[in-house]
Length: 186
Image (tube, rainbow, N blue to C red):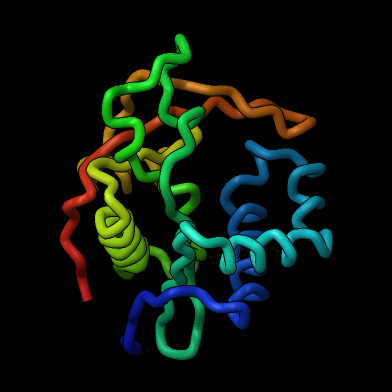
């Protein structure tokens, strides 16, 4: 197996991040998202969105690399209050110490090789270094693979749900929460 690593994304990674999102969403999430949402990934604004995320202060964008190939990415940062509040709009006492894993994707053909674990491990470390004490992530209720991944990391649904409208379909997401003291693997 080639050398695998996780590193901070740079502007030169934007095209690969966009490609991974486009291909992974089309392969793994097409039935949940609908054609409109998938077609929007082809817009030039997608690259611009990722370039802005990579440069945004306070946001950690990581890429997983195996050999010469970029195989996945993760975006993490301080969780906005509206992501942390309860369904009743109340903030927990630790609201200012909660990190958000905004997205974590590994291209399916590179799955089951530890890339997701490395990405969440490095993201958790970055969140801890920024003062977070626990993390949250939103995962589609129908995404058994991602739910299983987070469960293995010790993250579980906290009872909060939301519904996203893609324009064609709706997606019910569960908010997961868990520890940030995760093992880093090579």
